[in-house]
Image (cartoon, rainbow, N blue to C red):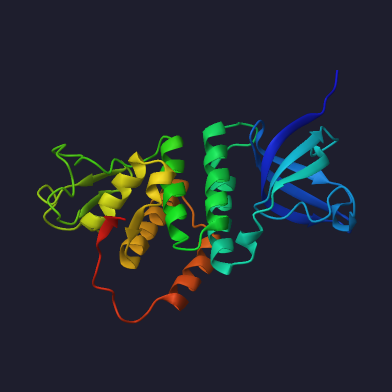
Length: 269
């Protein structure tokens, strides 16, 4: 009986091992988070040449070894080379990879999370607009698949709709994953508030598939507010800071203009 296994996989991380080998951690469709030893991968001109790049989607074949499983074959499915040609896209993909690395358990497959990551890498790769939009979509739906998605629709106290009156939401409970409407939280409560526009962005993205979400046109301040909240929420529940966010935030600071953009409108085009 063969002990080999095969699966589709996305490269999350690779580190050198000795003079010739690589240790590769993948998020795979059949095996979940899997770490393998790629023997001779540093100098490979046949089996692994140009294949084991971060964020690439592969078909891999492995087999158990004395320690780590051995990576026997790797065939490229999609290199997502457009991601690695952009610093901002690389920083965003690195953040997603770190989320999966830190959050998911080894050896436990979650097909919806795999398909979400593969789809969003594909969209990020070909995105020529706001790459932060796929990032917001990925984080929202990742949290939902993991059972930690905040309730962006109802006040956790009175259960009325939130942000329907256009007022900002001033009460955020990170532990319970809920919000207080403007009536139940007349003063800032817990974490900083969110604008009604950002709440509506979250509501729309939670209900839509990506093909419809691409029709959203969102102002830069709204996108940044949404990003900051999701980064804070994920970091809180993981209990640690994501290292990849440091570089991503440096890029944002370098790109932000000193003048505030007054328009925070969200619309369909």
